[in-house]
Length: 389
Image 1 (tube, rainbow, N blue to C red):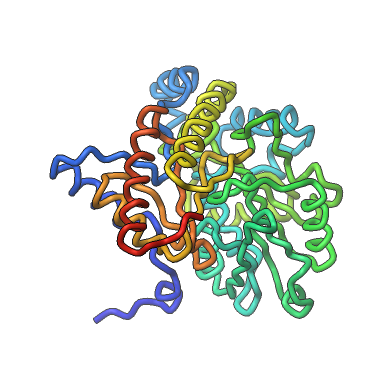
Image 2 (spheres, rainbow, N blue to C red):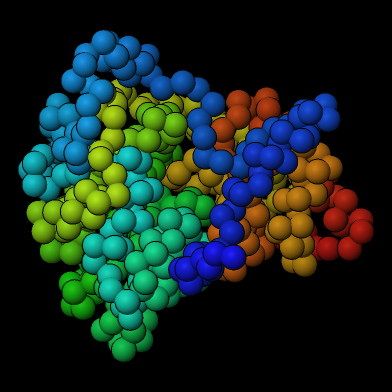
């Protein structure tokens, strides 16, 4: 019998594992399934993006290996976008690298900057690629619980000094998945200052920077003085451009940090499909998500959930009544009502007491799904006499 590595044994079960098979089983049984689980857009990419791909299909050069370089036009377009969006300039050759979706870059960064025995600090609840990157690099993942009362902020400077001295990398993500929290500027200043004081690499996951509401504008970490000394910022075309299946993102940062990440990637991938490039206005997408957010928040409150209306990301982080296990609640919502949501515990133990809704259905389907989720809550109350949150 083959022996699996200790690193594989250390990886927890991925939250979305098994959901696809369960959805198929329910649909084959005639259930009208409404999927609010994965953050996967229900519209195609913008028309201009699809047309650009169609034009590139007959260009032989587009079907060659990318070798981490990617299409020069994409590099220039991406750094130009960063300059327009955030006022930050990066060299498209030495301070930029294309990614096969930001997820792989986030995980691979740990292999570039962390050694066995180093600590990698990451938030919980949080994106599982952070934990996986730390484990696969042989480093020690140090989980920091995010608390609702503190705005779901990872306060790196409050960790013990001895831990900070051996920390090689910290992962931070705002607007946040799954909590939809945003980061105030003074928080980002504290974060950068702590990283600089302890030579900690800051992986700033900005996948949701353009999905913001009510006038809030998400910053780049590089708008904070001193960030270029320590940070690598990750962007994704999956959410803003509705291109989840295309697998395209990029990272920017100092030449040494980007060079290290590119070196790791040169051993595990040969680059993204070069024809993948996009630059479209995201305003219509955000406008639609705003409508969905408002509809879903109102429906959840009517159904008895004390949910807050977020200013960023494409999720609602919904508190459950005390005593309702999130995994059991999500299972019952799917099996009894045909609605897929993700349990908070799937994002780590600190996520218990919540479940996540992705705004990936039109308003009428969101309303219908939340009516069903409300029935699930009512059934829990009836069986267990739980209190309203």
